[in-house]
Image (cartoon, rainbow, N blue to C red; front, side, top):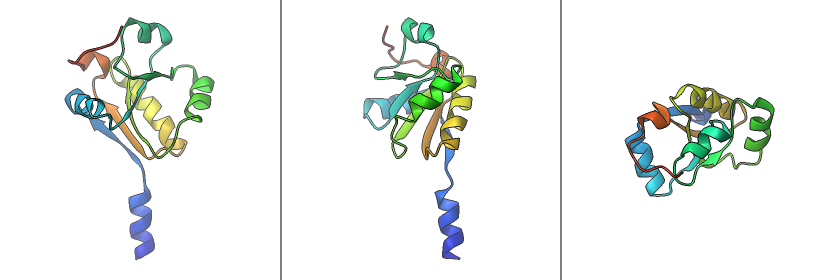
Amino acid sequence: MLAVVSAITAVAQVKNISPGFAEQKINKKKVTVLDVRTKEEFREGHLQGAINIDVLDSASFVQQIGQLKKRKTYLVYCRSGKRSVKASDILLQHGFKHIWNMEGGITAWKGKTIQ
């Protein structure tokens, strides 16, 4: 029975979070922020401290996430929320355990952005 409980708790999943909750965690420096949009979109404005890794460039995305620590908590966002779901799934497949997907992407963000 203990093995079953351990296996259940070891399963990683993506948590969908609101932009407001994301802002609180970013302000408290509790997450590493991943912007999975293109470089051009990133230059137009991004969340403070965000690391830009374009999920549409599949090979580069996998290579770049390979440089990240799998035990950290990652907040993933894109423009509207679609690409961040894809990116979060790839992170899960590569052994990341703590992934938060910001619902609605940067278009739902009400806080300050960096340009």
